[in-house]
Image: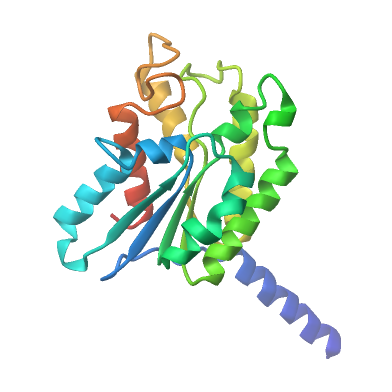
Length: 229
């Protein structure tokens, strides 16, 4: 009997761990904080992805009066988010937090690994940042990093490393039962279909990393799907 009870307990825990995250359903008064690096900083103005999302919500969900707050800082890596998540995210009392990080954690380590973020530190740091957001009552959307170079078919120098860190983000999302926004997959699929000339940039980015108008639009569309739009 004791063994049966123990087995049932383990089965329940395993089932809960593998359950899908609760889909996000936007509601009146939602406050969405977008946490990230220069891509997110740039996304908060002009034709940036946060602006596109703002425009969509103002048009389609005007009655909900949803607030979108940009919290991107150029050059940020996961350790930087750990240092400022309390001040720049938790203090703003968000109901939803969209975390788009990972490019600099890989890119800055291209010439000197010490300037990047080690995989274990990347994973642990993500979990700490996410934990602080969820403990504050926010639903978290975790995005995979997008691209460092637009050559299709894995031909960019850092594609393998970027895929590794994207897999870490996917793993964290699954373990912490989060909604995942797989920007890496969206970008790779789009470039495979739309970069027959094998350009290193100019399809979705201006410089292999930072988004042009089309890239911002793709990010906005992909995040909006994760938000149920």
